[in-house]
Length: 303
Image (tube, helix red, strand yellow):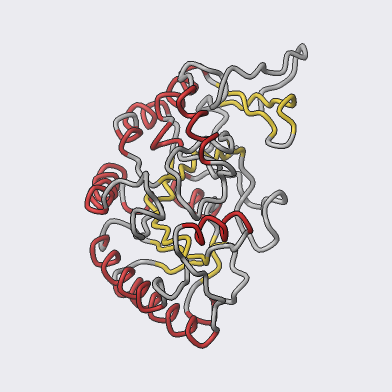
C-alpha cells in the first residue's frame, strides 16, 4: 500500500506532529470526504506501507522526523511545490529564499531522487504570461540544480472557485494560446534538461509531450519500485482523473485543512473554515481534523 500525505492538505507543513503521532499509533482515521460518517482506518505500520508520498510547499516541520521514520522502515518521497507568485496569491507562503533553502536541505538529507519539484499550478494572465514563467523556471531550475531529478508542470484548472479567487486578487486568467504555450513549454523542458532534471507533465490534457514533457505520475509506482523495490503501484488509480497516471494510494488528508490561503488551491473550499479547522486541530486526534470514530466491526482489517 502507498500512502498519500496528502493531496488534500499540506501535512508536512502544518500537521507533522499529528502524522508522527499516528505513525507511533500505527494507524489513522480518514473520513470519507463525501460522507463524514463513513470512516476508514488506514494502517501506518511500516510492514503495511510500501512508501509515503508527501505533498508539500514547506517540509521543514517534518524534516526533523525523517531519520526516525527511515529507521522505522517508513520510506518516503516528497512532491515539493515550488512556484513563485506575489504574496497576494499565496499569503501563507514562506519567503522564496526560505523555501529554496528548505528544498536543498531536504535533498541533502534524503537524496535528490526523493525530492520531486512541482512547478504547479501555472497561472496564465496578462501579468503571469509565458515570459514570466520562463524567467521563473530559469531562476528556480538554476537554484535547484543537483537537488532534484525531476520537474513536473501543470496548468491551473479554471474551476469556478479558482476563477473567483483569482479575480478578487486582481488576476485576469487568460485562455491558453497554443502558439504561446508551445514556445513556453518547449523552453521549460529545455531548461529542465540542461539542469539534469526530467521534465514531466501532471494529468496532461494539453499534449505537453509534443513540447518535450513525458506524461508523469505524482504517485509514481515505477519510481518507488526503482528507489525502494516496492511491488505495489503497478496499475493506474481508478479514482483519479482520466488523464492522471498515478498509482493507487490511500490519501490520509482532509479538505479545508490548509491555512495557507493560496488563491489557486483546489483542496480548500472555504479559507475561513480551513483556518478554523486548523486552529481547532488536535495533534493527538485519530483523524486530521478531530476525533472521528473509527470502524468498530469485530475483526475488520486495517487497510
